[in-house]
Amino acid sequence: MATIVNQSRFIVRVKRRPDLDREFPHARATEAKAYRDHVIRENPPLKAGSVSIERGPTKLLVRIRRRGLPAQSEVFASEEAAENYITTMSADLLRGLAVDTRLARRTTLAERMQLYIDSVCPTHKGEDVEVTTLTGMLADSRNLLANEIKEFDAAKKRGENPKPIRSRRQPRAHLEWLHLPLTSISSAHIDKFKEARLRQVKPATVKRELDLISAVLHKAFADLYKGGPNPMKGVTRPICKNGRTRRLEGDEQERLFISARREDLLRSRELALEPALVEVRERAKLAKNKSARQRYMKRERRLAVRRLDRRYPVVPLFETLIAFLLETAARLSEALTLRWQDINFTDETAFFADTKNGSSRTVPIQRFTIELLRALPRTGDWVFDLTEGAYDGAWERIAERAGLREKVRSNKKACEKDFHTHDLRHEALSRISEVGQANDPTYDVFALKAISGHKDITSLARYINPIPKLLTKRLNRSFAEAGIMLDAGAPRRIVRARQPHPQSRTAANVIAFPARQRPKPSASALGAVRPASTAPANKPSKL
Image (cartoon, rainbow, N blue to C red; front, side, top):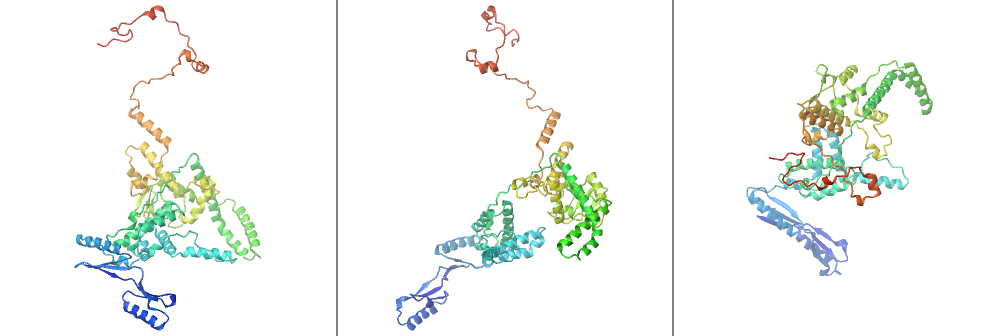
C-alpha cells in the first residue's frame, strides 16, 4: 500500500505588510486559518482579500508498506517523481529487489568519512596519508581553508600583518555534497569535483583521491545501503601516464658511487668533529651577538678540521645503501627498516618482514654489497641508521654532485630527467630481467616477481624497462643459435637501377649512368632466331 502526504508548509501572506507574514507546518492548517482571521480582525484597514494562505515549495512524503517488509519512505519535490517512485518500488517489492533506504537517508557521507578515518584507516599501511587526505576533504567541504585564504588576502590589502597560513595546499572545490545523505549523492557531484580538481593537481593525485572516496562509499553502502546504486560506478578515473623509464646511462653509475663516497667522507668527518665542537658551542653562547657567535664557531671549526687531519674512520653508509637498493630492488622504506638480524651473511640474503603490500619476502644480496655491509659498524638494531628526511637531503646532494639532478628547480623540463631514488628499483629489476633472460634458460618472470614483491604481473611490468640495443643483440644471437633466417635461406637478388633510354638522356643522367663500352653484335647474331621447341643452350630442357 502506498500513501502520499503533502508536507508543504502553510504560509500566511499579507499584502504590503511582510512583517505579518508567517509559516506553519503542514499539520497545522487550523492554526494558519486562525492566524489569518486574527490578522484581519486586528487590522481593520485590511480586507479579507489582502490576507491569503499559500502552500510552500512542494514536499511530498511517499510511504510504501508491505506485510513482512520494512516500510519504505522518500520525499519528493514533484508529483511525477513521487508517482515514478511508487511504481518502481512496488515492482521491486513484488520481485524481492527492494532496498532499505531508511538508514542511508539519515546518514551523510561526511559522517561515514569521519567513521572511516577513526576505524578503518588505522588498519592500513598508509594511515597517515589517508587521514591527511580525508581530513582535508572534510575541511574543504566547509570551505575552511578557502575562507582562511580570503581573510588573509583581505588583511594584507588593509595593510595588516596577519598570521601566515600553515597549510600549503590548494583548497578543493565542489565538495559540499559530502554533507548530503547517501541516497542523494549522484555521479554528477563526483564528476564536478573531479573536473575542478584536475585543474589544480596532476591526474595521479586525483585518481588517488577518487579511490579514497570510492573506498568510503563502498564501506558505507555495504553497511547502510546494500544494493543501492553506488554513484562511483558512473565516474571514470583520469588516465595517468606517470610511468618511469629512466635508466642509468654511460658513466652515470660510476659518478653516482663517487658522489656517494664523497657524502660518506663528509658525514664521517662531521661525526668525528662532533665531540670537539660540543665545548666550542658552549663557549660560543657567551658571545655578544649572533654575528660574533657565528664568526667564533667558523674559526674554531676550521681549527678543529686541521687538528683532525683525516685521522678518522670513513663509514660507507650511503655507498652501501645505494648499492643495496641497486642490487636487491628494495624500496627505500624497506631498506631503512632492515635490522641486522634480518641479514643472513651465510646465505647472502635479506629478509623484509614489513613491506608496502604487507607480504614478507627474502631477496638475494650480491657479494660486493655483502662486503660493504660487513664494513658498517653495528651501533644499533638498524642496518641503515637513517631517517627518511636525512636520506632525502643527502640524496639531493649526491645526485646534484653526480649530475643526476637539476640544480635549477624552476626548470621543469630539465627536472623531468632527474634520477630519483625509486629509479634504482626500476634499474635493479630491469637488470635482473636482462641478465636472467640472457644467461639462464630456466628463467621466468615469477623469479623476478619473488624479488620485487609484487602481487600481480601488471604492476611488475611497469618496473621492467629493457634497453633496446641489448634486446637487439640478444635476438640476433638467439636467432643465429637457432639457425633461423628471415629470408629462409633463399639467394639474395640485387636490383640495379635501370638506365634511361639513350634518346632521353640528360646531362644528369649521363653523369649518373655513364655509357658502357660494349662490343657491337655480329650480323649472324642479329639474324639468328631460336626455334620455339628448342631449349636454351645454357639451360637443360625439362623432360
